[in-house]
Length: 133
Image (cartoon, rainbow, N blue to C red; front, top):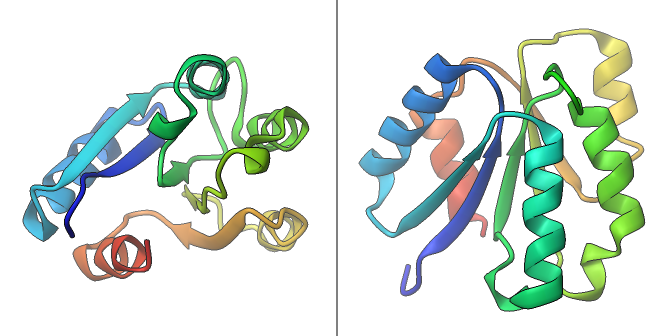
């Protein structure tokens, strides 16, 4: 990896966030991880980047479904309406504790969602996601 991979992690689980940051540091030091505790924080950050620095948009989003204020589904709906793909195609991976078949099937309705992963995220899985980008 020549340039820093910009990853947005959208999740309110502090343990998961700590583990993800530690796992990513084992893969490479060339990550820039931004943490958002709910969907609205991430949405507003992306909106700001589109308006000011579209080149700084993330390369990857790891998104939880169950969060306060704006959950993962609401984030995806707002994200799709925002037109981010006019600036950059950003792969999104849902990383959640939900094993509900209805959630897995619903995630297939979003073309930006490339995968549905059940927590906990392990080193091999995170590495395979990161190396695709």
